[in-house]
Length: 166
Image 1 (cartoon, one colour):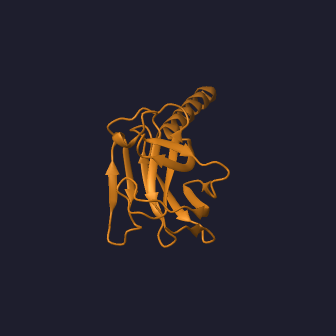
Image 2 (cartoon, helix red, strand yellow):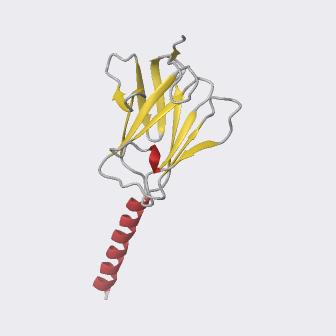
């Protein structure tokens, strides 16, 4: 009887592990770079870009000299960055796919901008283009599909970073 109870307990633990993995976060590679609106492509930064993105869990920190950009995708000219979230493995978007971003760099804007699976690139990655400042953090919430929990990433500009001007 003890063997049977042990076997049942082991099976239950395995099932719980499968459920927890299925409902947990997605293993994602994150890179900072530039986004070309004309051909809708993301290009990761090279080592000579002058700024980097450091990641610790769901915290993203920009360091170095963040360039000034003209208006991109309706974002006012300023310090604009593009960040690509690339899931490891294949993730199929579905009706539960949701991307929400804050627009807190604009003091008059409140709330979140929300998108569905149309926000994803054809290869299943997500490119987030956002303005940054030292005054306000910006956030992005990503729910890849019904099998994964929503993840919230916070992007900050390090206190020693430089924000280039026009």
